[in-house]
Amino acid sequence: MVKLRLKRCGKKQRAVYRIVAIDARSRREGRDLRRVGFYDPIKNQTYLNIPVILYFLERGAQPTGTVQDISKKAGVLMELWPNQQTKFN
Image 1: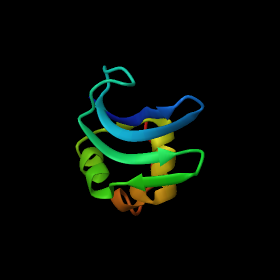
Image 2: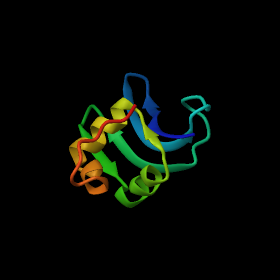
Image 3: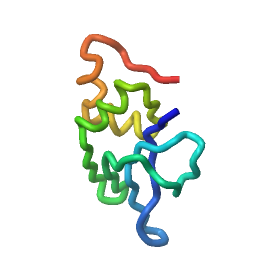
């Protein structure tokens, strides 16, 4: 199963995160299938590669809670399901 989740990068006390598509059994810093975005919680910046995220979601990838929240704010999930409430297990 593929998940969309955060991968920690950056320095101590200065974390930035890559949003990656990764096998669910891999560890947090494991090898990712593809980088699909970037999130900086300190500067509150987000970059999302929306076509790639939609590609993985259409094929059954499950986003983690944090990635789902980031995607909702960016409106990615509304592009996938414009007429439905989105809820992942």
